[in-house]
Length: 336
Image 1 (cartoon, helix red, strand yellow):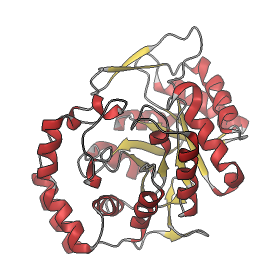
Image 2 (image 1 turned 90 degrees about the vertical axis):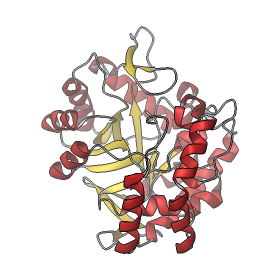
Image 3 (image 1 turned 180 degrees about the horizontal axis):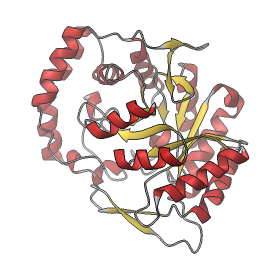
Image 4 (image 1 turned 90 degrees about the horizontal axis):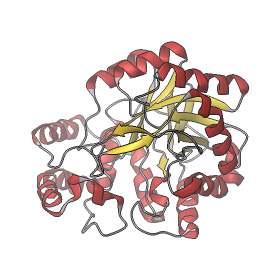
């Protein structure tokens, strides 16, 4: 990957707007209970430190992951001694303050909608709560988790811009937006990063990536391993696992999708890569300013995933993969 620079750590680096981060980051959502089943804080902190030890410098959390700020608190505690070595990204709009009206945002999950509120009058309070949970004096990258359907995005962005002016936030991000929304926000304040679902089984919206490239906005790819599906190791989804809400993971759909991605796993085997490493390396080759943020609870898998930042895929392999992926029809709708 000749467009990547190097850092003082062990991974190549990439630029997301004016931010320099490791070419693969870490998504911490999986470290709170109720996502992939139960987990204790000690194991979760080991996972975060394993990611930092393996060279990750970009860590993503949210006020909505886990109950009552659990995930932010976990990330802040685990990385406190490395605070100046890492970029902390968090999102807001789920942990509604008392009296805030929940605004429904439709999603493809089984429950149909999420409750958000990104009214500007709450944004500073969200940020101050996140700063307390993270145990830090600044948020490096701050996103509204979803655009609020009842609040103009420009107003929400304006409130984040005030936090940047005050020194509480360093950079503005957007999450789960359209190309038009990205342009609207960027006209109010420069956007450093847009976060979007992007993987071998979920292409990014063509208009969104075109707008990001035009505006010089980086892309943080969430669920780059298809909520674990692309590792080839997902079995029965049990109680307490959030993927029970995703139609792609019901037994019949998962079996069909597993069979359809067999040729991709075959190529990984030919190259001596794990399926996860191939999926991440493929994504890195799609754009020089995309940074996947996979999450895992297992130190060995974390190191394995991050090693994909050093994998160079020949054009012939990329062509074969594009042919396979172009012919695959995934069963079960989207993750979001």
